[in-house]
Length: 176
Image (cartoon, rainbow, N blue to C red):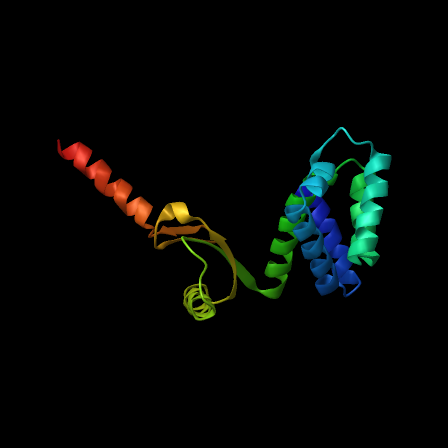
């Protein structure tokens, strides 16, 4: 369902030459939902009526300065009782935009935040492997201890210290 809505929005944005504006507005809305527990509850909870969600959403959109096609889209999915899936729709829209631009997205998990020069080196390495510009979606997870785990398309490379330690532990159990 999220993919269908995202595809419809992408087609409208492409026809109106507004892909960048819609993407920026969706990114801003997605960040608001991620940062606010109350807004997240409003979006995800079926307890709120469509009218209550519509009123609250209108206030949030006005305050955030989100208008045009994006605001109409968000109000439509609220009226259709599909607001709970908005974050999935945003992810699907991002993917469509990346495909349209000839870009790829790599999901990178690291133990601590990377410096800008390391991010640039990763982008360059991924571009040489994939032949496309690569957007990085970096997630910090201290539990991996060190190294990194990368998912680029259908390929997954896990060089985290946690994985290596688990492999050693497993090998030691088998050796007994």
